Image (cartoon, rainbow, N blue to C red):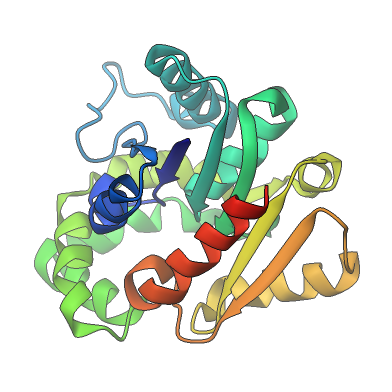
Length: 242
């Protein structure tokens, strides 16, 4: 059964290395992509902000599924990986067996400065200090901070500026509501910034027959790293019931 584990902004596929080995050991075919401009995905020639829009990133992932010869997947997206999936389910719902989201809001409305602040922070704070500070604020698990810091330090801030210019203001609520397939929403108790937007939206929407909302009290923005056991347990139970 194909599973895609898709990381968030400024991370890369290394975020899911341990999870990929775990699920593969249970017989799942696991695909762990690096989003455009992240990790081993090369920075596109001729840097242009339009090349990092949500529709373009979604197109990349659909092309990846085509290249892998995969027709239907259990998609698990963290943050940007979930945003991309919310775009994909409207364009190609038949490619999804299920959708799992964590650290992902259905909509955002952030100030314009959010994009340019990426290169500014890297320049002013330096990669080392910024990566360590970001890691410390992302998870309370000291054992996982090294991985997060390494991913942040390796990230190109131009990519952060380009992508944030598109995702700082988006609304994919209609896509989520229009999706009739099974959806698992994992809510990290420590993911305070996303929860300020996500939790009110979930209360307004109310219960839906095809949605399952699960609280991960110890989970931060990268809940697979600090609520690992419950994260995996919830996904396995969800997939089994699909």
